[in-house]
Length: 164
Image 1 (cartoon, rainbow, N blue to C red):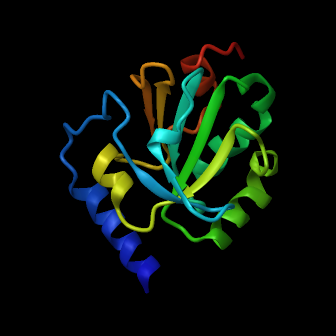
Image 2 (tube, one colour):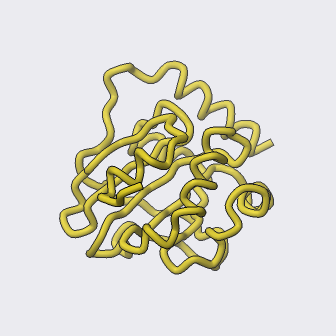
């Protein structure tokens, strides 16, 4: 029931969100549950070098699955990028996403899976589509690019300075 309520709120938020909402120019403070480790992940634990990609996704979303697979296929090129996959879905759904679409992501040193048990991500980042990727410079925490509803990993590679 909790999942159903969260999904309803997320869908309603996406439908009625103002069209002028923009991605935060710097990373706001946040705390999410870690999916594969016990405890919380706080924004103050983010790296200070390279790029940070916050990927707000839904495990059942086709665009999210394609982007996840693209990231997994390009992990060797993306060593200077720290990925944070954030979902409002429970661990079994995250496991299914990884096992079916992006096996290389599980256990990768630069990838973490986080769980938003409420609506914190939506409230702070104002995504309007799945997946919603926020690329930040790790040193300055400044927004480099926001990719909303994008499934082409080439656009992400370009945003972090990696040639195809």
